[in-house]
Amino acid sequence: MAELGRRILVDVYGIDESKLVLLPHGVPDVPFDRSIPDLKAKLNLDPNAPIMTTFGLIHRNKNIQLGLEAMKSVVKSVPNMMYLVIGQTHPGVIKHEGESYRNELEGNITELGLSNNVRFINKFVDNSELLDYLGASDIYLTPYAREDQYVSGTLSWAVGLGKAVISTPYLYAKELLNDGRGFLVPFNDANSMSSTIVKVVQDHQVRNVARRQAYRFGRQMAWPHVADDLAHLFREVLLFV
Image (cartoon, rainbow, N blue to C red; front, side, top):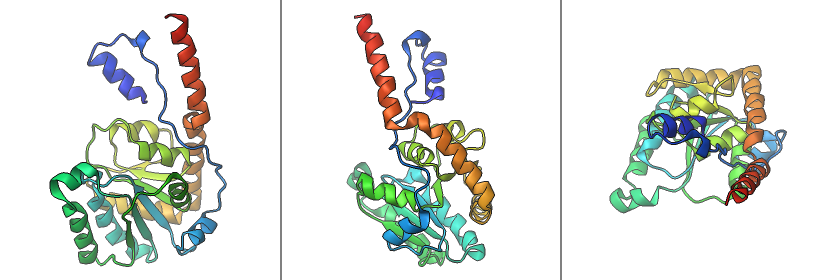
């Protein structure tokens, strides 16, 4: 699902490159021009408040505490900024440590004085609701801690929907956000992350250029295109059976 994954299979594991086909991570095919203020109102969010979102199953490698640290500085410049963390704790994490990570994050929110600026949506949201939350977002954030992550479904969705994405430079983020399709900040650098968030929120031109670049690139990941690619692959395979 990523060019880097193909290169790892060839260079590290010695796989014959002729046997590999790159098929992008599929994403919903959603129009670019959905009204962000209207979607905020639909979700009972302040239409005038900038919204930043992270979604997915919650676990420590998501490194959400970095986003919280960044928000402490962000709200000094953008007092009405809202950070939404959407998703349940990963079932494997629940099994081994319960909700200890989420409880730590909630403690961080209180300590950092962010009770009015961070909201956990602690539930599984279906595709329709998730698309509304992403559509209502001005920024999508992946503050992940591990550099070796070479695929992220949540990042794929954000790029495919044309969101302004800010991310740490893990492998997949460097590939997907290349050529002006998003903004990379160093690992565990809350200051750099906060200054980038403020810049993207306040500079409409910078934000919208990145959004359009991301959406244009994401067309190849839309499910109808991926389905066509899969059908083509299946036809080729059947010819050689």
